[in-house]
Length: 339
Image: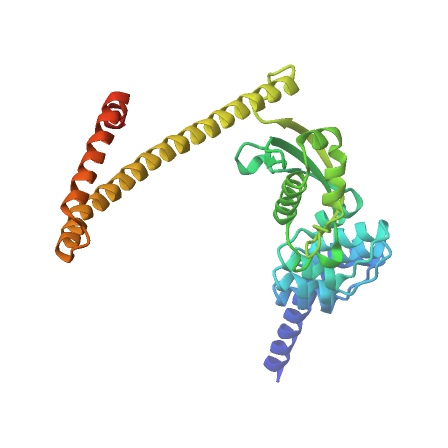
């Protein structure tokens, strides 16, 4: 009987020591939560430890929320931690959104965080818009947008886009790269529809307004606040004082070459026409020779049929001799031979 009492007392002592050890282990966290008005029970802290959730992390997050006037239990915080989320970042985003009067609940913030977006940065960008370069100089390339107006003059353009994060469209919305690509496409299209490069240089704000009115931020996680043309220049005219004179000179030279090409084309057409006419003359002469070859046959046929007499034949021979003599006297045969 006495041995049983000793065993029971030993077990009771072990339980008391374990309870005291657990109590003192969580005492600091529990007291910190209690004094901050974010009360958490010892049982909840023990459950966090058993679920491999850092109690101090959850308590600190709850204390921040309570001190900011946002009441939230520990279960959603634990669930977000177990899902692999950044609890402190989400809490900071909720506090920043509350101070800035931005509608953001824990479910949306945790979804944005689990989607791989920095929710705190998104809230900060909603309050303080971000300026991004278009095109992005960090992506390589020349750092310029290359566009051509209707008059054929190439322009190099740099733009700066001011964007504000759109919390509602952040989940599933496109990132900054899509905004930069759309803005670049819009600027190139707007310049391409301009009648002259002079219109673009004179009113670059018209280009930015046209692009801004196109609604390029649709289906993205951002809202375009403004598009500003940071720099614009004519291709190859960076070191030229009088760009207009240079362009006019180049245009005059291009017109000259075009006119020369047209004149050369007309000359080639004339030569071809001349050769064609020569060929047609030779063709006509061949037909004449062919027709003359039919004359003896016709005469022979006329002799056989009695339609031509011998005196008629001699008269015709005399006429041909007179004709040949006149041609030789006038020099017509020599001219035909030359031709």
